[in-house]
Image 1 (tube, rainbow, N blue to C red):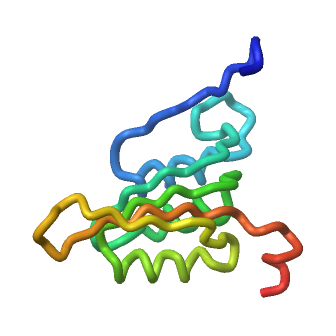
Image 2 (tube, rainbow, N blue to C red):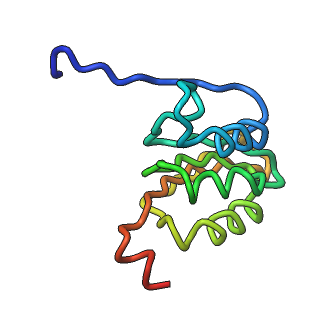
Length: 122
């Protein structure tokens, strides 16, 4: 490990759509705020209905290089990945059977922002 190097971690709990709205409103403003910092990773665990449209907008326009997406809604996950596919690509995916003897599974998906060259092809 490198000495003297701190990696700040900010955890926000609450509705991701509300947080996204505040982030998009304050991003690139001059006043100091948790909403105008550059973040590398976005961790989302949306309801079965999928990501709020503001979260998708935040992911695409924000500074995030990686999205870690935890999903219990297969159809919503599929739609959200399609929505994000112009800017992000799936790097890895794991299916977790956390509820044995049910048809419910959790999907853990790692998405990474495409390079500018790749995303401009679309």
